[in-house]
Amino acid sequence: FGHGIGIFGCTRYAVFSNGTFTLRASGPTGSQLQPAPASIAAVSSSELVTLPIGGTLEVAMGGKWKTAMNTDIFVRVWTAVFLLGEFKDHAWTVKADPDCVFLPARLQQMLLREPEGAVYINNCKFGLHGPIEVLSRDAVLTYANSPATCQGVRDDAMDTSHPKEDEDHAFGEDEYLRRCLAKLGVGHVNEYDMLLSEQACGHWGETLACDAGKVSFHPFKGIDDYLGCWRNATSSPGGWDQALAAAPKPALAPWRPSGDEPVAV
Image (cartoon, rainbow, N blue to C red; front, side, top):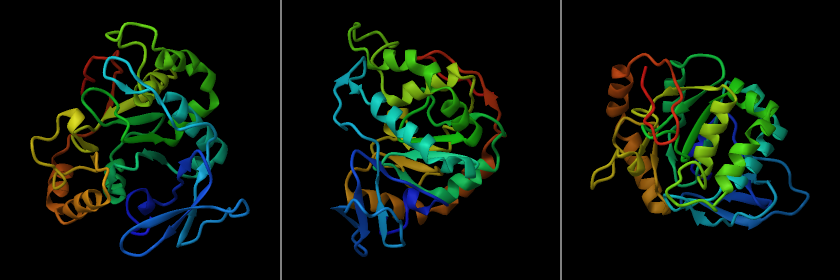
């Protein structure tokens, strides 16, 4: 927040938590988190108030990949997004994890290429991954108008009673969102060569790839590591320019069941 990077470089932004806190910019070393008085509700250039979603942020680990069973948390986050309603004023909505180095200006360039309508941008060859999720206004509106349609997907996501090899139960919020949007008839565009650089998607070798032509990079959980990646990325614009110029024209792709690689069209 103090550096104005990541989501704080977007046109509008919000931070959700299980409580209300004030983020106060504290100069070049970053931001400080302090409990916020109940009366604080405004955002200024030096202060940001987190929006509460209620409930706990603690989750169990489970499923085939020992992932965080965090679907219920993000169902609450998306519900708060719907109630806030600001997504209606913008063509695209981005959910980004705190440890995801994200360059909004690159995303804006990429989104100029994307088809209109209810779509999301797929960021990984194995299917949507959670560090950065990009949904069109119509996609968010479709979800907001029919959340009950995805209740069965939510139940499957939180069900840890099946064998761990069962990929149709006990999965994280990104798989929940992917299955939910498919159930709602929301299409997707494969942009995993441009949107996200992540070890879990097979994009890195032994060295970090922050100079690659990508919109975002994950994970960077330390402040120094995060800022180092951001500096590396922003000082290497040539890789992004080349990736953007070489990218094929995007098109809607068919949704495939969990475990299948999305097919590029």
